[in-house]
Image (cartoon, rainbow, N blue to C red; front, top):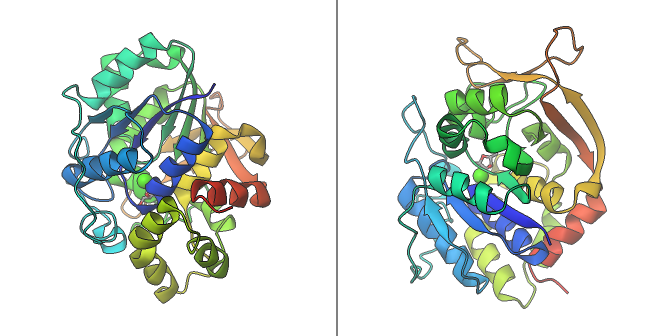
Length: 307
Ligand code: BDR
Ligand code: CA
């Protein structure tokens, strides 16, 4: 069965992705980054999710901020606690003592060749793990990254930069320049695979603890998205997780070299794609351009316990 290692910064859409993961697989571990909010909250949110699904998965806390930049979170979207400030019960379990980057390396040995690594947040932990052990990719079967904006239509104030990459461009550079091939689910794919508000709202009325929980934590992001004129609800991390758990869902893909802009007055944190393959560099990214929308929605419904 599918062995998932999920590196994440929950975060509302991370939560939907994690609920989806538990329906399709038994995640081996969650490694946690700072991102949407600070590490204390992202770790607590991950523990709360593991409890919600009744699992015993170990949770490993990682880096509290980017390698170089100061942390610039997205609490204005996700709420100060990253879960919409609903005041849910504190988790009873605690994170493991081992650092996330070390846990990634150890688990890659324990499950050599078997793990699908799904990166749903800034790439800080993974970059650190790669610096500690450059042979890590040899023991990971697939790496799926939610990040980037392949044609420059990002979602941060530096226009072409997407949040996960823009939060820690140096970490993204380490991963993109040293991981042989990974699957990239970017913000622009996310824009093409939104969920109609009427659909998600009807699914969230399902009589299931997971639907109730997600309805509560996503209330704020849903009204934020509507207030900002977004035509559909965007769930970036759930889309990446769908690709991770069901590779056949991908209907269109492009393989090219993708690099990270680390300077740039207006473009720091951009993903730069060599669309014409003009430079003699091997393609490192399988860029997901489209998925089967009906299958994606079926996975979301199943994640929420909609029958
Ligand atoms: C990404 O940024 C975060 O806010 C989301 O959780 C997602 O991982 C989208 O740009
Ligand atoms: Ca995320």
